[in-house]
Length: 264
Image (tube, rainbow, N blue to C red; front, side, top):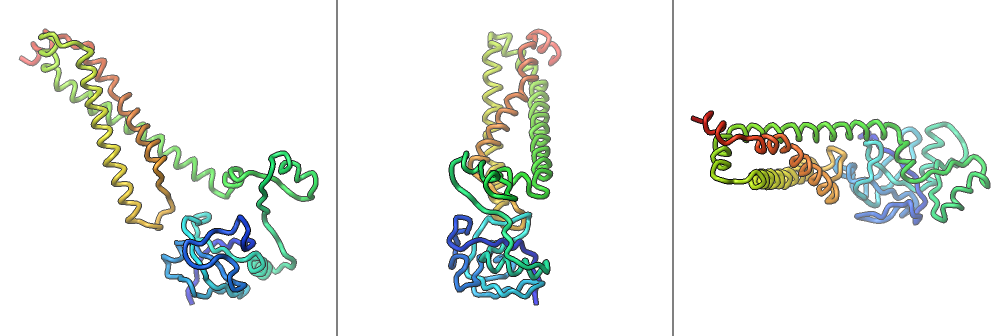
């Protein structure tokens, strides 16, 4: 009685395109066995359940589960190619055994020569296929712009924060310069403070992001990786260091007598 929206993907059982199940049996077990994504498991579907396509009425038995295989923000269901063709034909009212794509591995020259030897064939790499998924480029550009603006905003906040603190400490900096403290020492001290504060911020932010990812589960389609943590952590640290340029210039130009007189 429950209606579920899924992306139905047909694969040859045992082929390289067939996903390795995390739990249960592989695609094609029992003839009509299908493997479902974890997002469907979260909606209450379990191994041993039976699904029926609409329209068409093709019966599919859930035999295994995988994770991280959603397609176009929808749960995926991997079925034997014959079952997918049957569901496709009945849904479209067409006959025959359609195949949308063939996964090929081999030498690049041989792969590029396929259109010359096989009619009505287009060759594309995995990256090209992903980039041409409906809506992928637009979503990727939107996320990239969000990340760029976040970095710019972070740079502005860090620069303003340390510049204000530097202005508030002008009397102390003037006294330190008056007793012989060099500008290089003050600059190194400020840089070290920024680096330590930025490092603490990156660690705390990464911990919060990890906890939030565990809390939301599969409700939001995103994935955290260690390499991404290091990349964006390094970017934020670099931005924090660049944000101290104004403060360093102000420290270099501070006049001891002027700073002390204004403090008095």
